[in-house]
Image (cartoon, rainbow, N blue to C red; front, side):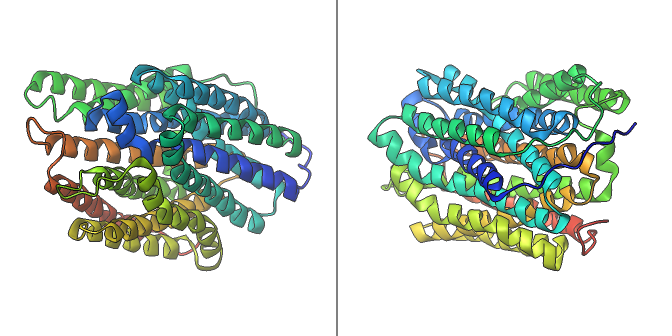
Length: 465
C-alpha cells in the first residue's frame, strides 16, 4: 500500500543549522562518561566490568530505540518524532545529573539512550528536503557534527567534573539538548509521512529484542566471573539463544515489524550492517582501553592522568572524528563507498596494532586513538550514507536505523569484551590490570577489524548495489 503526499518544501540553512546544533548537543551528552569513567569508578566504587557496563547502558537503550524511532519517523514524519524523543533524552540527562548513586545513574543513562534515535530521524529530514547529491554531503555533515559534539563533551567533561562536580557534566549538555530541540521545533519544516500510519508498535518484537540485548550484555559482562559457575553461564547462553531465536521468528512474521529483517537481505544494507559491527568492535576497544590506560598509576606502567588531562589527551581523536564525517561524505560522492571504507579499515588496523606495540608514551596513545577515531568516522559515515541513498525514501529511517543499531551493538560488545579482559587480567588483591591485558584487548580488536576486509571485497565501487 502506498500513499501520495505533497512534496516537502526545501529545507533552509537555518533548519540545517538546527539539526546540526542538535547533533552537537546530543554528541556532547553521549560522550561525557568516556573521559570521566575512571573518576566515576572511584567515586562510585565500581569494578572495571561495572565501569564497562555503565559505559554501554546508553548504547543498549539506543539499540532498542533506534529502529523504533526510524520506523515511526518513516510512518509519522521525522520532525514529529524527534521532538518527542528529545524530551525523553532531556529527562534522562536530568536524572543522571541528580543521581546520588550508581543505580540512579544507570537509570538516567537508560533514558538518555533515546538520543541514538535522533540520527536516523535527522537523515529522514535531510532526504525529505534536499536533492540526492546534496543530501549525501548533508548526512556526512550531520554525522560529523555529532562527532564534533562528542569532541566538546570529551574535552569539557573532565574540567567540569573536577571543577564543579560529576553532576554538572550531565546537566550542562542536557541544557544544550533542550535548546537545540526548541530550535529544531521552530526552524525545521514538517516532513510528510512516507509509510502508512495504521500499524501499531511491534511490542512482542521489542520485548524479545530487549531480552536478547540485556542477556547478551550479561553474558559478556559476567562471563569471566561465571567461569567457576558453568551451569549459570550455560543457562544465560541458552536464554540468549532462546530470546534471539524468538525475536527473529516474531520479526519475520510481523505485519509491521519494528526491525524489518527483510531489509537485511538487500546487499547494500546487509553488508553495511556487518561492516559496521566489525568496525565498531575495533573502535570500542580504543575508546574504552585508552582512558583506562591513561588513568593507571604513574608508578606502574601508566600515567596517573586526571579526568581533565584524559579529556585533553583525547581531544586530537575527537578532532579527527569530527572532520571524518564530512570527508567521508565527499569521498563517497566522488570515489564510492568501497574506497572510503577500505582506507578506513586499513587505517584503523594500523592504529590498533600501534597501540598494542607502543603505549609507553602519552603521544603513542594520543596518535593511536586519533587514527582509530578518524578511521571509524570515515567507515561509519560511509556505511550510513551508502545505506541511506540505496533505499527508497520511505525506508530511510528503518534502513539507517539498522546500521546505527549495529553500530551500538558493536560498540557494546567490544566494550564488554575488553572490560572482561581487564577484569580477568587484574591480579587478585589488586585494582590495576596487568599490562598484558591491554595488549590483548588491542590485538583482538585489530584482528576483528582486519576481518572486515573480507566483506569490503564484496562491495561494489559505487553507493548503490
